[in-house]
Structures are given as C-alpha cells and as structure tokens.
Image (cartoon, rainbow, N blue to C red; front, side):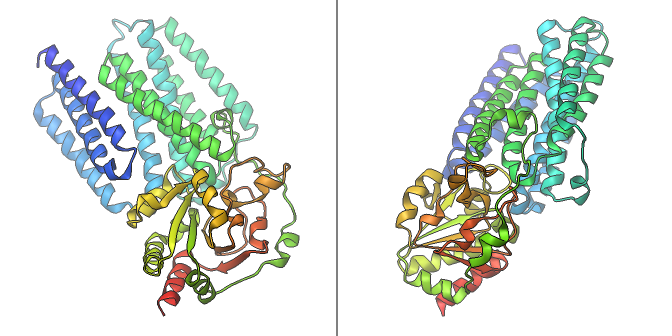
Length: 457
C-alpha cells in the first residue's frame, strides 16, 4: 500500500476512535461507539501489519486467534467479573507496549533511536511494566485471592521511592548507551516490582480509582510506544485512552476525597480508629420484607442506592423486578449512584443497565442528594462507606470530607445488608442506628425478591 493510503487509513482509524469514544458517553450509543472503536483498531492493526511485510495468512491467523479468545472471554465472564476483566485488559495493554518497545530497541541496536525515541522507549518500559504487574495485583485483589492479602512489603513508601528513582536513573543510562538494550530490560524488571509495590497495599474498595489510573497508564504506555515506532495512530489512540483515564481518575478521587498523589504513591486505604461500634449499634432497629413492602406500598417516591453488595449478591435483576412492581403501583423510583460505588468506574451503572433499568432513572450524587429530602423511602443495597454520615459530622473520621449520598435525609431508610460489619474504612456507620433507619439482614438478591413477593401478595 502506498504511504498516502497508509496515512489515509490511519486518519480514518483516528476518526473512528474519536467518534467511538464520543458514543461511549451515553448508554444508548455505547454499543455503537464500542463497535466503531473496534473497527478503527481493526483497520489500524491490519494496515500496520501489512506494512511490516507479513503475509495475509499470518494476519488472518492472528485475527482469528484474538477473536476466538475475545469471544470466549465475553461469553464466559459474568457481569460481576467485569472489574477483574478490565484490570486484566489494562495489564495486557501495558505488557504489549513495553514488549513492542523493547523489540524495536533491539532491532535498532545497529542504528539506535534518537533522543526522543529513547525517551519514549524508557517511558513505555516504565509505565507499561508498572501497568502490567499493578493490574495483575488489582485482579488478584478483586478476585479476593487469599494469598494476595498476606503479602506485605515493609517500608513500602520508601521502597516505592527507591524503585522509582532507580528506574529513572537506569533510563538516563539508556539514553547514554542506546545500543545496550540490557539497560532497557533492567528498567522493565525494576518497574515490574514497582507496579506490585504500588498496588499491593490498596484495598478492594479503592479499586475504582486504581483501575481508572491503570487504564490511563496503559494508554500512556501505548502512546509512548507509538513515538518509538513513529506510528501516528498508536500515539493518537494511546493519548485518547491516557487522557480519558486521567480525567476519570480525577473524578474518582473527588468522589473519595483523595488526591492524585495518594494514588500515585499507593498510600490509600490506611485504617484508622473510629467510634465504638457497640455504643453506636445499641439502638439498631430491624425489619422484615413484609414491613418494607408496606412502607413501599404507601410511598410515592423511592430512592435506591446500590453498592458492592448488590454486585456480590447479583441482585440487579431482582431490583429490576422490584422497580417494575413499584411502577405499576405509581411509585416513582430513582437510583443514586456514588462515583466510587463498586469495584470499577461505572460498576453500578453497568449492572443496572444489564438489568434493563432505564438510564434516566440513574442519578449522580449531586442530583440524588437534591431529591432525597423529598423521598419517602431510601433503600441502601450493599453500600456502606458511601452513605456513612460520619463523613459530614466527624472531622476526625478517616472518611471526613468524603462526599456521600445523604440517604439519612429521607423519611425512612431501609438498609439491606448481611451484617453490621464495617466497610473498607473499618469504622461503624451511625446510619444503621439512626432514628429513621431500619436494618433488613440477609443476602441482597433474596431480600429484594422477598420484598417484591410481599408487594405482589
């Protein structure tokens, strides 16, 4: 293919990426946006491979292998496993970037890259390797593998700083000796350790921030590799992913009242002492599905606040059934979605969309907080820290200042939860013992189904 045709194909692929990304901003156009982005990537990959002198037999074989693997993952991964899958895909992107950059360095050893290319290669090696191992650790934590929780790194902050500075020093040596690829692979090796050290102490509840940051890292690594290869479409696609990931990370940080510095240096999730749970929970009132059904029967406006417990119990379809029954009784139902509810950005939105909940009923935190004082009933399904009023009332609390959903301002609050166990912040939640709060103990899906059955009776 002539160079003009290659550049034209790359331009078309870039347009497809941008239009596809635009489509992902709304559920109604998300599927189309995803397909357009995939089409753009297929076009870019095919054109690039043909320029490398590969025969179409190898290209088709690679496409078939990747397609079979992708289809298998799509059909075998449950919706509750999406955070783990996203973590793995981030890691694969980072790993591919540093491997490609390393191979290109080796091929160019006789005629080393210029300074810009070497800087890009060092960035690809550092960021890509951190993304790979950081994502694998995130996957292990999301999968709740027991062994990962037992791994502790002493003096972790110091280790992080030393590893980062050492990586930067080796990158400088690579610039001085571009023909020696050994420096590059040493950089990658240390960066792999840095990725583990950065993420190993971060708890599961902080994973939305971590996953969005690692997603950004994978894009930045790809963009850096694009500079190494002088491939414009790779630079553009990587920059799009990197920029969108950083913006999303900022949104996640604001939702948890954390700074980006906390994320970059893996200093999240430190537990702190809180008020005495026994004293707070002395006045907890319990309820039953039948009593909750009576409350809902007489309500005009209901707000449901889902959390990670809904994902664990796979209660989204049961919630959809409940919403349909309430709609038949002329009860207005809306959902309050906290930015960091669940284990990945948009986790609750994805689960509710799978259960055919209209997107218009999903409100962000600010929107739902304006509605809650007029709500007759607020149902908290598997959420904890994101509805803990200590964030507003106790300046000494570890979650002080964290924006929360103000469910305690509803007339009646029903909390569906297995027990009174604390959330990730490891502090009790006074909401559970509030005068207008009722606890319904049990599995989220089963409890919602029992409420729905009671409403139908």
